[in-house]
Image (cartoon, rainbow, N blue to C red; front, top):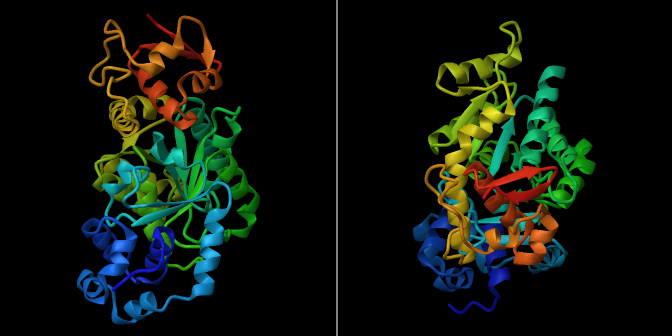
Length: 378
């Protein structure tokens, strides 16, 4: 079978019409491109688990819908990151049933930025909202990306807190949504979604036009867990989507953190349950960052590999400031205080790429950060 669609169109057809993301991912693992998958034909699709009905839709796609999807992709800062792309985040590949592609609105480089997810109740108390905001703001000020689900309650407060840290180089946040990126759910977060897409990124596994279906929200949680180095639960009932995200994070070997609350607060019972099950009790943002130091360093090492930086900027095992780092970022720092914009100009790297490396260098004790400016310690 000859495929007359280009790579982007082929990928969009598969994502929109194949009725199993797991089947598409299996096909992506077997074939080296979406075009090759379409050319493989119905027998290969069925063997991977695509239904007969979906095969028919793939063979006869809605061309008007396809044209609209392609037009969406042409907008500035609209991206599709397929399974085969080097931009596909390495951490997410480890998740259960990772999506075969991600739709991104905003800065695609943030997918590789060190992330902490903040999740919790859609109906938190004032204290829960404030905690989510303060923790998120502190994380973002420290160079971390705050990932959440753009839902009401804790998610909203976390995104706002990260945005408050923004000064053009910080305040990065990712919203993982359960709809197509041309829709907003809940509608009251439309302005917030626009702000997140400008300062960070909004991502989805669903093509444009996908409505907020009930079954998409639990599956959205696996992406939040998969992208993050650690998951912080602020307030949650004993049965909630936040606890699902925490469970998925734990199953991936990620650290799970929980903020305790009053024994009389039903929105604290989920956090207390997690703590009894082994989650780390935290009272300060610094406790989360300290616990995530080793995995943040490992992610920076993987990022350098993605960028082809053969000479590491830091030693990735153990704090040993006596061992002087080497590489383009270290050279660009020089001996005077410099800000992130200056480092971007000197190295040619993007802000997220630099932030990841600088965070690891700070954790290793090689540099000091003050008021958004960086200097060597040696």
